[in-house]
Image (cartoon, rainbow, N blue to C red; front, side, top):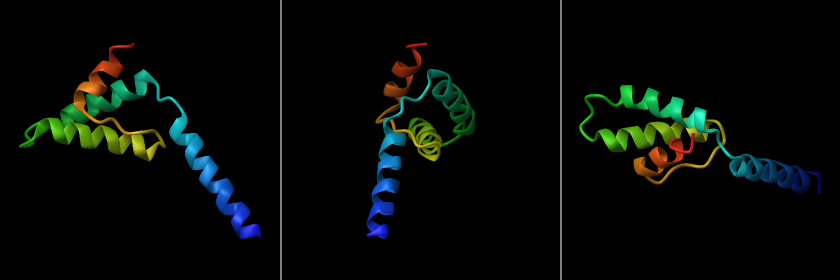
Length: 77
């Protein structure tokens, strides 16, 4: 019973983290870093998207589907 309760608590914590709204500043900083990181890559846009999404996932946020979606989000600033 304790194991089931512990599993439920851990799952709810993960869901709560994914529902938090990421700040525009965090996304903008990640995007700027990833643009520099992806310079010279064959598929720059894909490299930027993967880089930003890795930063977001490491912090418990949801991923973006495209670079356009990232840029639109940053424009909210």
